[in-house]
Image 1 (cartoon, rainbow, N blue to C red):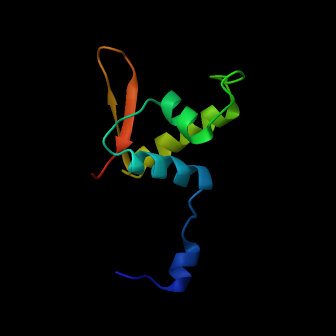
Image 2: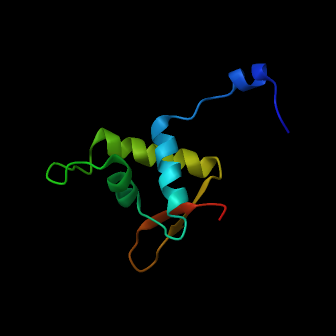
Length: 91
């Protein structure tokens, strides 16, 4: 159902990085990725200077949490590796 322009203006905008993460997972809907893999694919850091403690890495992790809260993505814990994997929710 359409909403009014005023209701639209009262909504919250989607951060460009959030859209990039969602677009990446949507394009690759047949796979699931760890937060490190999402970070490397979306941010494309210099492989020689990449840091697990970088602010961009922390932003990607916050965005993954936000997208889970919006039910846009799902996460599973892989027992063998102990890693958490993220994938698009509705595919």
